[in-house]
Amino acid sequence: MHLQESGEMYLETILRLTRKQNRVRSIDVVESMGFSKPSVSRAVGLLKKGGYLTVDKDGYLFLTEEGLRAAERTYERHRVLTEFFCRLGVSEAVASSDACKMEHDISDETFGAIKNYLDRLSE
Image (cartoon, rainbow, N blue to C red; front, side, top):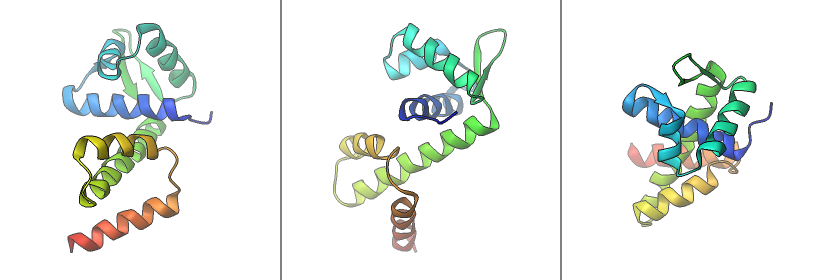
């Protein structure tokens, strides 16, 4: 199953919430993303069907290995792009918002170049 932008957003949100509060339910995703319960329920079902997450008997969401890889990839792109834009002088709120839009579409080549550039600045 090809992961679409919305799926990446859900996985990234689940990853961030898991790191923050350890156990995550769909209602946590609803509250974090501001989406309706039916929308989150549908997304969870699709991500579960695609092999990106599992749901235990108590309703807790767990990323599979594939889901974790996709979530970490998206989250890394978000963090790096946000840092890059902030270093350019963009406010953190705008930088994060713009990073969220770009993290799904930026090529691996361009992302790698930005990441390498930031690494060189940190040396």
